[in-house]
Structure formats: C-alpha cells, structure tokens
Length: 205
Image (cartoon, rainbow, N blue to C red; front, side, top):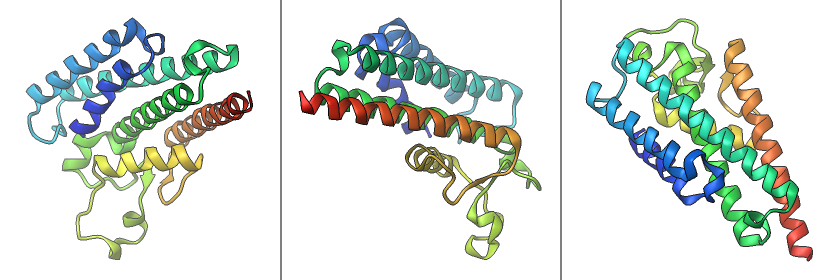
C-alpha cells in the first residue's frame, strides 16, 4: 500500500505541469505529508481502528481523487483542443498512461476505504454484509479460514475495472460501491476512447 502511495505521489511530477494543481508540487506535497502522518499515527499496516487514522486515510483519498480528476480533465481538454501536450504519439501515450495509472490508484484507495467501513474495521470485525463480494466470499473453500481482502485485492479491482469498464470477479453489492464502480468505468472509458481516437488522428497526420 505504501509503495502504491509513493507511485501516486510521483505521478504529478511526471505529468505535464498543468495536469496537476500547483504544477505537481501542490498535490504531491500534500500526499507526501499525509503519508508521513499515516505512518506516524499507525506505523503497522495502516489499518488501526482509530478515528484519527481513518480521518487521515480519508483525507489522502480525497487528495488522490482530486488529483486524478484534475489530471483527467486536463488530459481531455488538451486532446479536444489539440494542445501541445498531446500533439505527438509519444507525448499522448505517456500522458494517457500516467493518467490511467492515477485513476486506477485513486479508485483502488477509494474501494479500500469504502468496503465494510474501511481497513481498520475489517481487521478487527468479520463483516456480515460487505460492500464488495470477492470470490473468496462466495466460495469460502477457495480461501483459508478467516480470509479478509487486503489492499492488493482492491488495487487489482481498480486495475481490472479501469481495463474492462465493468466488474470482473469482484461484485459490488451496495449502492455506494455500485456508484463508485460506475463512475470509475465511465471515466476510464471516456479517457481511453479519447486517447485512442487522438492517437489514430496523430498517426494519420
């Protein structure tokens, strides 16, 4: 989870400056501060059942979502307007890949916190009605006793929903989970379609 956060912190600095608030430094600096705060308040798996720890996690997720939304809108605007940041195949594919990664990571953290009241609750309570049904929930014989999803499971969910634009093996059960996955699929589809269309147009020129 920390490695994924470090990747998310690096993304604003790798993107064109207008793809991130504060030319990359704004979002990246806030994310770095919140990561340090999480590690200090909960130096273990960052799943402590604490109001303070959860508030920091939620703040981090809000910053990630804002950063991903800003980058997505900036990419779409640049593509539609034929801007300088996407006027060559190399620049376009790099920008598209970075934004795609940012979207997947932001939603992975959102799913991680949304499911069953967050990682703190899941670590201490067996939740009878989770927000997401993993294969291990529906087929307990496939997992060891007491199995619980960890961050990597939600990162996988974020990646597959970005690529497939729909649930694969993890099903949303609650309305918030369905709304989050629907929004994620819509953003990923719109961004991917525009990048592909622009790439074809650039290659034809």
